[in-house]
Length: 129
View 1 (tube, helix red, strand yellow):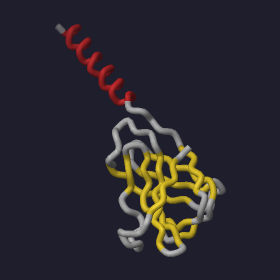
View 2 (cartoon, rainbow, N blue to C red):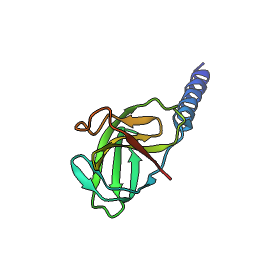
View 3 (tube, rainbow, N blue to C red):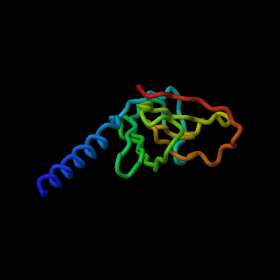
């Protein structure tokens, strides 16, 4: 009887481990932003940035390639499919300034980041490589 229980518990551990690792893990993704923009009140130059997400805390980070700018936001569930692997930065155009609106990292997305820009402003999308 104990042998059967041991086998059942071992099988459930194997199934749980397989289910946990079945979700695709995204690595750090490089994004080339061709224009300057404002994030968290700081002006960021055009250039290469990396985007990453901590799978435990859900924190999405944006880092400039030259390490001059580093940002972190909590990502929540988005509208994307759970197997979505895209990394998308959405910007709002407001006058001559572009504000970082949100970051989608796979199936997670940040809340609206640019609270100062009106809802109706045109937006631009930059997708990760």
